[in-house]
Image (cartoon, rainbow, N blue to C red; front, side, top):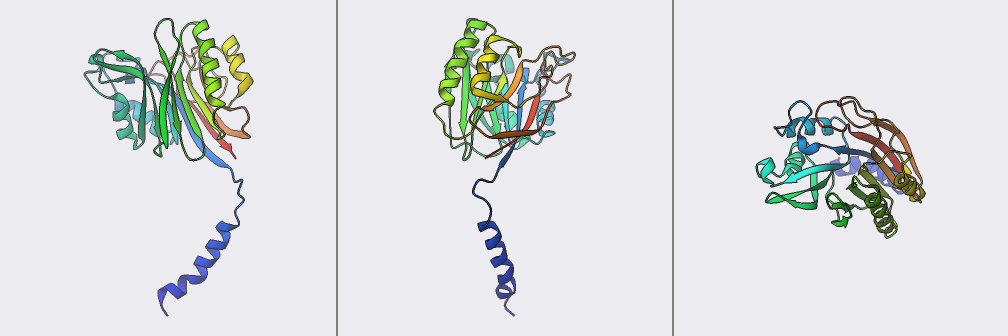
Length: 252
């Protein structure tokens, strides 16, 4: 018998099965946020250890990663494009968001993703000590925001207003992750709590060797039906001065 006709019943059953799946099926995403300090560890600030940071990331098998403190072709980092090196080492796509020009290159944030974004852009955010940025990547079923907020409370509060306005432009679920430089009981985190649902744990993330404060977070837009069955601060005390934050989220 022709092989096609032997397989035909299986193909029919498979087609019926997938056509009967509910339209509102949940999507599950593995999300990581990590201030990598430009891949400079607490054990050796002078050297970039991209392979070690890539290993920390890969061990969590994330779908999307928000990264902070990245040089791009700056003299300090010997002209290296740190995000693209991490992308190559992890097998992911790297999208960069410049915050400031720096030493012949730039300094900013980045997103690693399993899939290439449909589009990406970044918006300037205020910072009295240095300008900040919001990096936006839009995918088929969700949007991912990455940021690293200012050290000053006034600038952080103004940034929250800009980020909340940007989130309101999307009908898809929006995830927001990064280094907020703010403790959970601060005014700016209370402001974020009005428009976002925190899905990361309230556990210390900084400094990495002896963490005593929570300043790294993952959020999902407040109008999204979401579950976070798994979340943790990754036990990595040396590779950067922050510990990574991980959440596995499910939403419709």
